[in-house]
Image 1 (tube, helix red, strand yellow):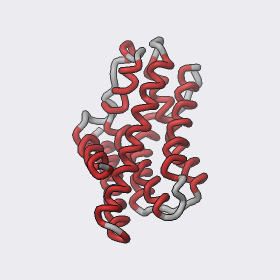
Image 2 (tube, rainbow, N blue to C red):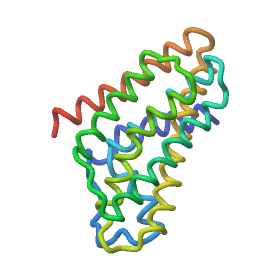
Image 3 (cartoon, rainbow, N blue to C red):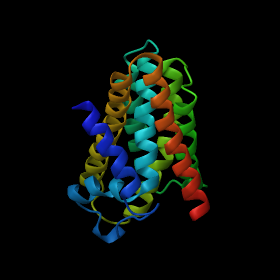
Length: 200
C-alpha cells in the first residue's frame, strides 16, 4: 500500500501543470480551493514530496520521530508565513526561494544528510515560511482560514506521500539498496527543481 501511494505521488509530481500555475486569487475563498491549490504547482509538489523523502531517510537513520516532526514543522511554519502575508507583512524573494526549496530539499534527500531532527525541522521550516507567504499573498480579500485549512491538509498529504514513497522504496529494495534508491528519488526532485528554474 505504501509503495502504491508513493509511486502515485511521484507520477503526479511529474504530470501536473508547470510551476506557479495557481488559481485565481478571487476564487481562493474556499476549503476546496485550498485543497486543490498545492496540486497545481509542480514547485509545491516536488518540494513537499522531497521533505517526505528526507524525513523517511532520517527515520531510517535512527530517529523515527522525523517521520512526523519534519513534515509537521513544514506545515506549521507554512501557516505562520501565511498569517504574515495576510497581515500585510512584506517578504522579499518569495518565488526564487520557493524554487530553491525544491532543489535544496531534493539535494538533502539525495545526500541523505543526517542531522538532528530539530535541525531538519528548522531547515524545512525556513522554506515553509516562504511557501506559506506565497499562499497568503495570492489570497487577496478571499476567505483566508477555510482556504488555509485546505492547503495545510493538502500539504500534509503530499508530505505523507513522500514519506510513503521513501519507506516503500526502502522496503521494496531493502537495506543499503533501498536507501540508495530513495536518494535517487530525491535527486529526481532536485533535477525537477533545476528544470523549473531553467524552463521559467
